[in-house]
Length: 161
Image 1 (cartoon, rainbow, N blue to C red):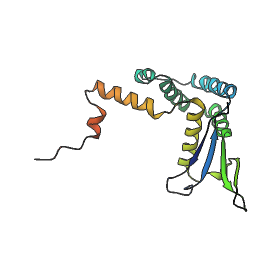
Image 2: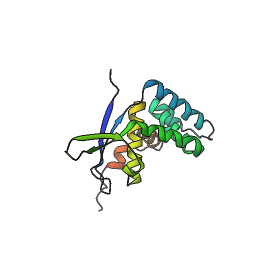
Image 3: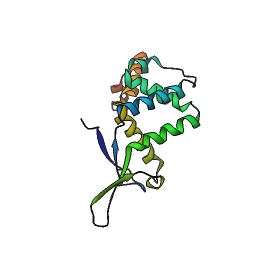
Image 4: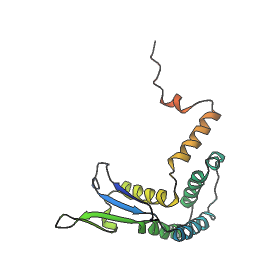
């Protein structure tokens, strides 16, 4: 079976608007090595782990992992970020108008938000889970503890008398 791929078109306004990228998941062996190296880098960070995140399953563990990476040594994290980008290709057009794909380079990103989005998509595709779901689970847990709910946050404000 072929590895999963996803095409991402940047829709946000800015210098990268309309750019296309194709992301292909890492092989299982490469993803495992990447994960082990990430875990080793995280192990050096002093983590205060929220129990709500752990209750969110693998996705919660991923959030814990990213939190740990944020406290890790940049010299250990930077190669992990670079390796994540090896899954990404820039999609452009040749002079004849046919689609051309090539490995991404630094000049393919004009906006930091684009780079973050592409890294997020590569991480999600390779690991098989998305980070918003566990974060939402954590928020819902915190709201339950406070006696609130998400619908409370999104309900229209009561009209004033």
